[in-house]
Every structure is written in structure tokens, then in C-alpha cells.
Length: 63
Image 1 (cartoon, rainbow, N blue to C red):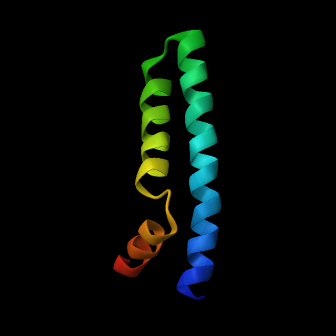
Image 2: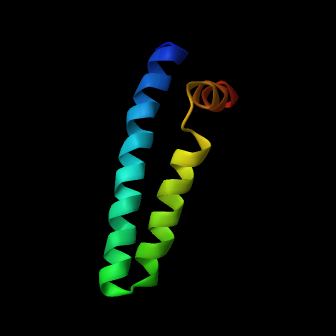
Image 3: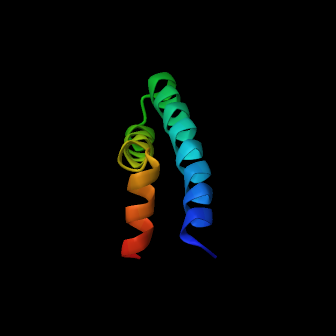
């Protein structure tokens, strides 16, 4: 599989992580469970660090 194809698939996963992160922050707000806060922060952090195409390609080249 080419790096560009992997980058496109990783882009989908990164966007899903963003939505899951927002959902976990919502659940944290409702239930006040710290695990949801931690998971939400990590999921949004993944989106922050891999949100651009160039960052995703560099990440895949290192692997």
C-alpha cells in the first residue's frame, strides 16, 4: 500500500478520534469521570498533531 493511501486512511481515523474526543468530553461533563477527560484529551491531541496531510505523511514515513 502506498504512503498516500495510508495517509488518506489515517486522515479518516484522525477525524473519528476528534469526534470521539468531543464525545468523551461531553460524557465527562455529564458524569464527572476522570477517565473520560483523559481519553477525550488524548483523542483530541491525536487530531492536533496529525491534522495536516504533511504531518500524517511524515508520521507514516517514520514507521
